[in-house]
Length: 112
Image (cartoon, rainbow, N blue to C red):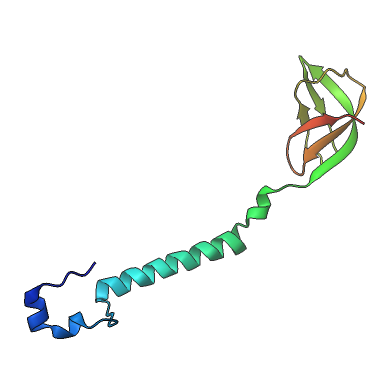
């Protein structure tokens, strides 16, 4: 914020000209760093770490229950990642259709 004093107007009348905006070195430097920070944020958010990596595809697969350990069932899927199913009432050998996120280790049973 620029404040004008009578002393400054007498010695530096050019500073009082409306529409004449001149930045000093530190303001220019801050503006440059701010712009570079914003550009770096845009580049990182779009190219390096895109938001859509958080959104996984749902995979549906029919599997056989390998074991039920006190309400937690374990199954093997085609992606070779063992899946756990919480609140499972099925028994070993039962068939079920499950839904899981691609690359995740937990699943839910889907009712047909």
